[in-house]
Image (tube, helix red, strand yellow):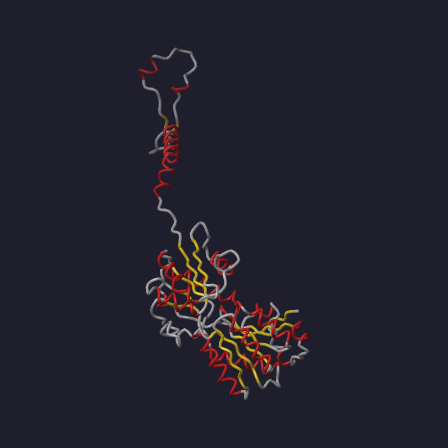
Length: 365
């Protein structure tokens, strides 16, 4: 260590015997470095400049992009008019927070499929970044409305390949991807489970939305499964709510041994009418989703809506980060759930075989 000392001239001006002044005291300097006082000043100035510059630097940062996620639904409006809560929650878990980096535009046809083309056009006009479709007619309307905006199907609304929405599961092509049906396997499985629950069933009434091509394909597979099981099908292709009244009247005159409701947004909107008719006439019924069993239906076998929306969030995330729908393989649901309502079972005077109950995933008391 060396020291900075006063020169000779400065020493001559000092009074002999007086105490040295503070500003003349030698300051230690580390070899090759500036005096500590200069370092202190430099630090203070740099901090001050940084504080002054911070607002300008922040202002110069580009604002965070807000992605616009559109929803086109063939069925009923949600209670808050937004996309289903399960979908928004799944996206929130992936970092998409409403009001910060994502905004939603939802359109609902309320079961009136003729409104779908106009609603799809609205979403295209709004230039949303992606469209999530609920229901086969919604998927068809969105596909007709745009060939550039990515479209995600969730939950499955039919066999997407057979319906021409995608080219294949591994390489969808175009701007559509998402979830698709295993219509052949599912229809056979549901009919088999219903026959296990009601072994003596010889006539099974099937209700489906005849305006929905995906549900019509499901019905055809149900017919094939019925022939294999040697069961007669009482077919009711409904197109509007009034058609349910006609179907119920026919079933009253010729009572079926069981009912099978094919689920789509329109039939789901009328599900409670089916549940009430089945309860009044003590007819066992098979449904496709567990929420209908929680409403009082006897049994269901199908994927979970919550699982479907989580997969939809996965697709949305990938696409918003730059992936192309054409390159994202479409998926069939990874798991199906068997749900049984024991209260309804008892009300029908039905005893379900242990071999069926042991396979049940959820029992509604």
